[in-house]
Length: 415
Image 1 (cartoon, helix red, strand yellow):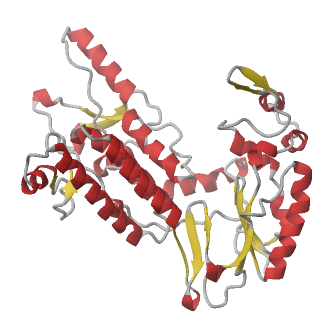
Image 2 (cartoon, one colour):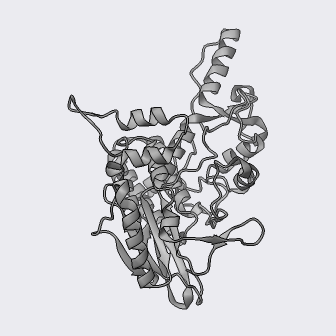
């Protein structure tokens, strides 16, 4: 895709018609094979649907909205690479590489794209895949499936992919994804009318961090800067609406300042009562994605060392700097119970909305615990702080209060 000598410049931008609704159960169970949970899986598939008090049988498709559905579709579509004619050859070290004259296929659940050398090859791949999909109960959505040249661009999983002059191929957030982010922020601020700054931070900060984290591997700096400008305008409008009788100068001085002491930015929105602030999209560093070696799977026990090394070298999601340092020092464990701070943190979300939910969950799940309490002159230095589970934090203080007979409020989430 990159460089003047790039070969696979034609793309089959594919869309399957109602894939989750039409996948054939018999083919799916054949793909599952003798997996120990096959009876349970068949039970899920045949459970039926209750709608408005009426039960309907499910003769095809996977559970609607079920967390297992993407996995079942991945199982059903296993072998698509071979059907498309993709082949590998030995590469340097233990890394397989695509054969020179083969197409390349990229897939996530029912979203996939095939990169071919010529338009004719892309059309041939489409025909082979159509024949392969038919016995599985699936077919292409002809209205949305197209064959394009990389110079014309196409969107995939919220990214826009296009090849520019001199062979430069840029992957950026798609215009649709940016538009959805702008609309989401506008709607959230509309719903936040009449609330305080703390509520704004609780609602908006996970959206900023989640969206920026998902797109941090792309060419996104300009998009981040544009979204920061949009966010600043929304925050200004919210602040002026909250204090309609105050001057703009008073409003700006109250809600905007250098809340983040590590940055020379006096236009950061924050809570004047707590000092907490709203992060900016542009604060998220651009980190290029490291491609997984060939067909390596995290479920292959023989590749455990490879995946352990990869997870250790993968940058942490963009968190509060102090929290990130504490999590690193604690090796990602809660010192009160010894368990992982954020269960499932090793499995990174795959979509922007999932990253948003990840940050929401993380903010509720993790608290800062003072080793020397603030009432005893303890400060916020990192040497006096630990990241702990919210539940562990409350249980710790409840046990301590019971032992001392002291009555106090439940510790407030601060991470």
